[in-house]
Image (cartoon, rainbow, N blue to C red; front, side, top):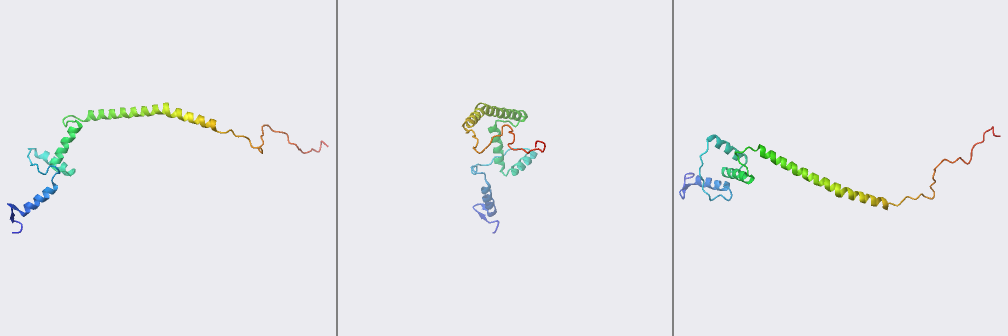
Length: 153
């Protein structure tokens, strides 16, 4: 009576499987029953592989796909090429708009403010007065002493 023992109409192995299954059950959907959908075998194989790849149950994978299409307002029938290019063009326009605004701010606010600040600081700088000991050499003065030549004697 080890593995095949029956408890409330179920085997112990079936109960253990049910407990494991409930542990893996999608949160919020534990009480819902399963329905079947007829899908071609090749498509099911691909879908199950994708579900494993993203580590979600098949129900949650399908739900995520449907919500993605609904939230983004796209259809799996329509090609994404033009929409993605349109979106890229729109983003570039907005970025160019932001760049234009920043350049305008720099031209109309930042540069004039910097110029005013520089002019204020230039006027505020004290003029350098020459030190008393400092001599100015504007032009060359003849030396006070010079050597005598022997001819001058």
